[in-house]
Length: 229
Length: 82
Image (spheres, rainbow over the protein chains, first blue to last red):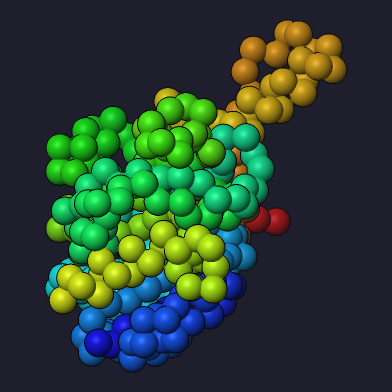
């Protein structure tokens, strides 16, 4: 199985993603440079990692979405290719229009870096199929702009189509105001596109997927993806 | 030609910075403040365009890049550069 990790100027979780895919899951993993607009068809899936691409100038993801590689990512996704966007990767996916909604500055203005609990709302995606038995994941977040927003009609359509995949919750799984770290609408932590081949999430599964760490819930996201083939 | 562009959140989108600034002004005793909106201001200098063309081009720039129309609205003025 072959996968690609996209590198933008300012990506800083690219090596973590590469490490998990290459050394923990032993996949044939390659870097994809942001200036490369060549077809990505050789990959089984592509990851847009976290970081601060283009310094988050203007808006997080606003400039990256016009980089040459994103033209290839859009083509790839439109053909059904599986794309996982993590944190800044998620921000780029909403800016590019591959995912609905927008990600705004956190409700309480602060950069938040801590482990949070999320509940898998839909296991009917290639990214979460293995979470049926264990729907509550403890995965760290690290962001300043993770407040998810969508217009009412968009949100309704997403609910109807089960595109809201991850929600911030309490350790026991209750989705509450208190467990919402950034003020996201409806506690949303991760969403998929209509066809479920593109998925973006603010928490960092690659930071909780190495067996050396006590937290390994992030493995379920990667394992689901690998098993979807 | 100089385009002066303002980008602000749409109605119904929570402007957390505006709220924080509002609180700070209230703390300073400015109780007459009813609402604060924080947005972005950009100046784009254009060359070789008629005003009519500039209007279209600036609108396109706003729609494509300068504003995220899911959450933001934009307005701009055009003036000749000295």
